[in-house]
Length: 102
Image (cartoon, rainbow, N blue to C red; front, side, top):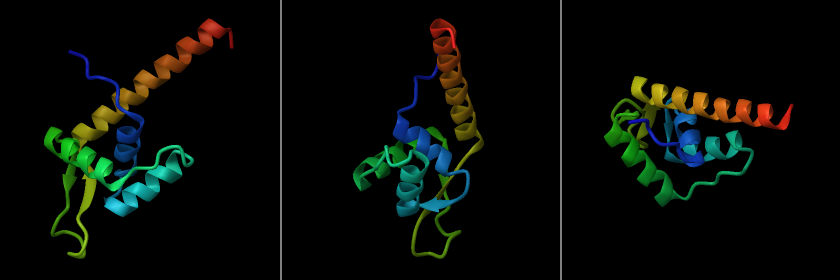
């Protein structure tokens, strides 16, 4: 079974975690990467992080940071999911251009 498409928020969370970040840093980076289009509320962010932890797409660096904030980082599995989503989006873009004659 093919994995389903990622939401824009999940896509940007994974993309932001190429380097370790804490929750507030993820919220900020997601907003910057999306040019302000994606603004994550804390509840939405932490719900998504918990789901991604369960799926093995990210890991918690608890104890590896300064001890005050839990940081997260993308895993190999998460990078594979992100790469598959980018491939899916590229296919959509290419097919759209083909149909529109661009």
